[in-house]
Length: 271
Image (cartoon, rainbow, N blue to C red; front, side):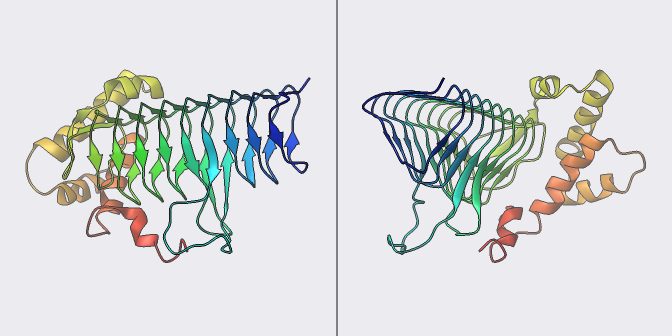
């Protein structure tokens, strides 16, 4: 049975699934839908036109689907929405903004863990099984791929892509794309430090697949020469492992933009 605390404010047009819990002083806006088993603790705000899946948990004072932080847009402007999948945990003071474009959405996948104070800017896409530690800050239009792990107080520039099963050390500032399975630290510029072995294990890669990623890393980052040229040379070889190909493709794509942010080459088409 759905439970709504007496102090909560729920718009009459909101759709609530079975076994939804709305805690004290929550505010649920127009056009919101919340899937079964989702729990909102005290003081959670869900703005209009947000779609939330099943079995999510929102801890106190998170703000979900708020107006994007964009200059020059007043209340008369139209914005897009926010779609959240299933089984996510969003801790205290998490903020996620809706898309700045009327026909687009910010998108959060399944089984992600966003810790205290995480901010996800407008038009970001988070895939599944991502961990974002305290105070991670994502600017608009970022993409975080499957299983990436971001340590505390990491910041991402607009349009950055963080590859699947990668690891970012605390206090890093990312202003360019990071390929899958790698570890990175530092800021302006961030530096690739090695291979995320734990991430490969979480991804279910066997010993042979892991060794191929390690070998590709050595050839790309440790043998000398320009990274892009190393990636192009490796791409021409026969029988490339699919995980190695994902790393190569990321490097080649990111080099289509002068600052190493592939998504920024799509800026005009995203508007």
